[in-house]
View 1 (tube, one colour):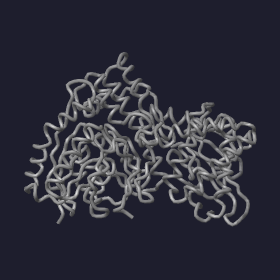
View 2 (view 1 turned 90 degrees about the vertical axis):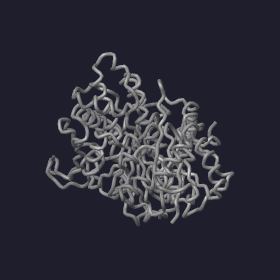
View 3 (view 1 turned 30 degrees about the horizontal axis):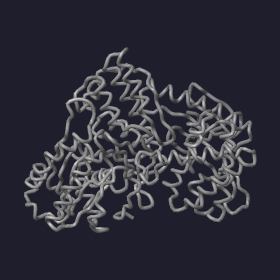
View 4 (view 1 turned 30 degrees about the vertical axis):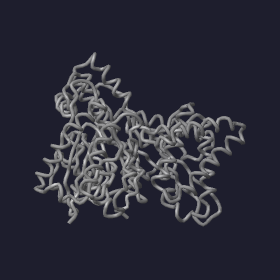
Length: 225
Length: 327
């Protein structure tokens, strides 16, 4: 464990505010899971560390808002990255109510760009987006974090599931604000693809999303094709 | 004092439970169908239920020390489950309600698993891991519903264990035998580990484990299967726990009886400062008491159903049910 202040204990990693070459940095340490036998645990932690670092690098290259990648220590399953300052979006949805539509449209556009690189986040949640701007400011800046389940994929299915999971999180965590969050997100996603002359791709994703929802094991017959 | 008779018949178990509104379980009797070979055939299973419902209900009443006419409310599991099996419970419930002239309540089977856990473990607002032959769901209460934070994208955890046990030639019930075999081994065979966000997929793991049987000792495969599947389920539970920050974790459903799974969930719970609770073995699997208790909660808050609304709902999701008795 690197020396420093433990900022957060997430599901799979501990975030430590430490020092890297004399500057403040965030150490994401995939700690050992006591519940998993080492044969599974070591493999999963190493695999996810490598994948996450590679994907962060690709996204940074493309200018998608993610933390800067500084260093990787494979042996301790640790990624050193830029310290992003802000609040978990999950915690500021209420005070941001007036501009949620704009924010979620921007998030939608950013996810569309990410998907355009054939990368899916794998766990888009409002806990995994850090809102950086001041709450009362007109600026909108945010960063995606936690690419632990992200991967390269070109499949419409995987991209649609990425969106579907986000929809599920909004439904379960922000049920009362669903209309303010998800439709603008989809509008932003769609607008980005249309601007890049890829509205056909959007239609494919839209269709697949509907399919995924009716595929659920317990969807009422009326909604099933 | 209101007394409810609950009938459970979603899958292989026909069960009757008698519960009062103080939350006391006065009687609960199960009769479980065990096929000679293969999995559950819905029609054969429902025939079993038809054959035993009378004696199961009578035994439950005897256990409670009451007569049939002392029942104030009839509750039945309306879904989700196998159509032919659900229909047996629904028909018996309708007939009894009409005969006794008492209200009838349709209960969601998954909600009932959560509610009996809350009652039996005296825990108010847990993150619930519900693992059985037909369901693998991580859920927590939010905005008036038991929201689903993670679930299987294909087969259920209990289904994985049962199907593997059958392929390995183990007698029903397979879960305890796999658990015992797994304790004899520490040799891990690599198997696919598939977590997608907060959801998981188990069918690829089942295929790989069955294939591994050809090359490895059964105990090693059983150990590897349990470790892989339970690690996935535990990881999904941990993700939901980190997200919801609940202070209690409840494990319910038939697979909740597995000691290794309990150990893993206990470890992540403690890691996140949450208390661990496992539903007592007698109430962890499908049972009529959970239907009776949930039926009572529902009856007290929204009353009974009209007959035309008692149709079975085989695809009824946990998160479709308004939880009116909680705020």
